[in-house]
Image 1 (cartoon, rainbow, N blue to C red):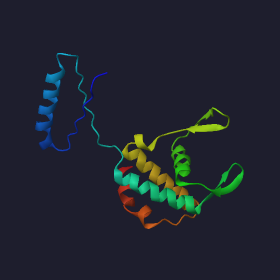
Image 2 (cartoon, one colour):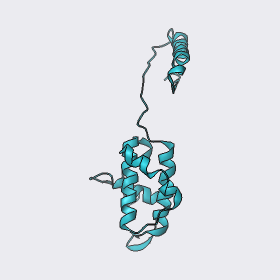
Image 3 (spheres, rainbow, N blue to C red):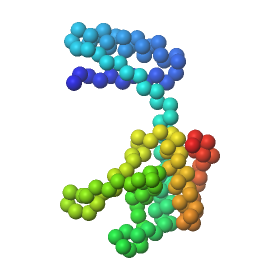
Image 4 (tube, one colour):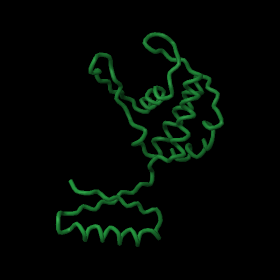
Length: 151
């Protein structure tokens, strides 16, 4: 497999220079092997602001909500709440046996979520927290309306 080059065009003004660099890269590699050029529109990917909002929310839930763990009520870390709440986006959960026993929940990865789907996750966490009396910290409340509009 050959070298992979990635160019990101953020503005229309960047396009000319980027196209020249792509053309140059193709020119250098065309005699050795075929070159594949693909374009991918990135609008709609989850934002860094969404990701920064997720962790304070998960932390609020982890500190305030007790949940059954192996038959006993206890507090879960934010990472476990991320798995539980992300699985709540799907009507169907998948479970696989672990390699040494037990079970593993297979689910969505937030890193692959688009902006609208991530907004649905934020809404789900707010709804869950409301049902369980979670008092949201300031970071968890920041820019809430922005995510509702993206849904």
